[in-house]
Length: 434
Image (cartoon, rainbow, N blue to C red; front, side, top):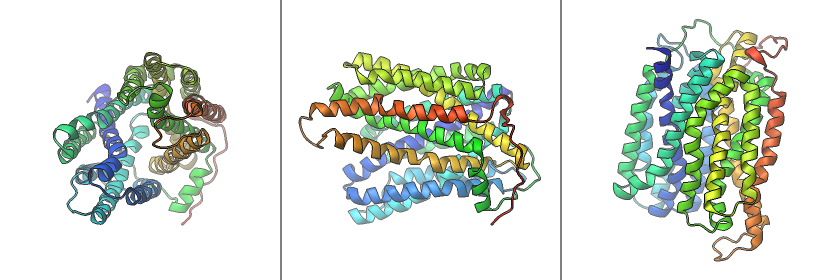
């Protein structure tokens, strides 16, 4: 298989990742509360448990993967064995086998926890292959552009295709359809997945591995910056419906226009950012992407019609495309540097700790939105909101994210890895631990 075909095959797995993640995040609560009539407070409890379990599983699954040794590799067996159960677990979320609100709550909780375990195991091992398969900046930039193109298509399908499917063929059939599609693309990605043969065993215990990972200056500056960038993206997705309704006075259908402009623009731009990355290097390219992204957000402070807002969304898509491509390239650099310092490849732990930290950006996004709305005088369900709500919504999309991006820019200015991915710091001696 040629290098480009391998990139294409491997990258196709990202469609599955984002199709499942976006469909679940967008519609699971709506389905159980609005269609099945389960108490929203109970579903809220289930989703909190889901968030905590998912976060804690990431570093644990990553550590186990790093220490796995089989004749087929460390990562591939988990993907090959887990992808069918994962597709089945996702499908069963949309086929409740019990009746009654309390029974369906327990069904939902159990189904989601099974889905969580399988999703983390399969997806973490899938993404952990990236730094090992592609070793140069040019390779990583090209492979990341393919991966993120598939990711955006998966996002669009998970959000836009779901209502069409459940409205025509029903929720259960939608779940089966998405499960089959995700399984097909995971299987395709395996045809392009390869691992280097390894005989050494990662010597860190679990707690020592966490301590050492969090003591890595390059990782800390990276993950804080990544957290902040993901926070702005979460604010954008969650804030657009409020902006559409209160700042523009448009119906809900306008949300599709604005978010569609973001994603449709981002698809071709991921390839442009791969070329920028090859030319400038990952650190300077991410700084450029943050600047482009920040400038593009400014019009949210004053645009007043749907056409200009769609143009603004398209401009935002330019910056988001760069963010999507570069974050995993920068993390791959951190992992390379860690191997030079420890003589061990620990992709699993680094991706696991990154997943553990970054996923809390969604929780912080919810807090920020609730604070902005409450301080601006928003009243849920009121037919008319005060003018201060419009100001608050504009700041939520064009003011708060700019402040967050400024801090993220500072993080990546401090990111210590330069050309070649070296920090110049002396290599510490790894300490074994429990």
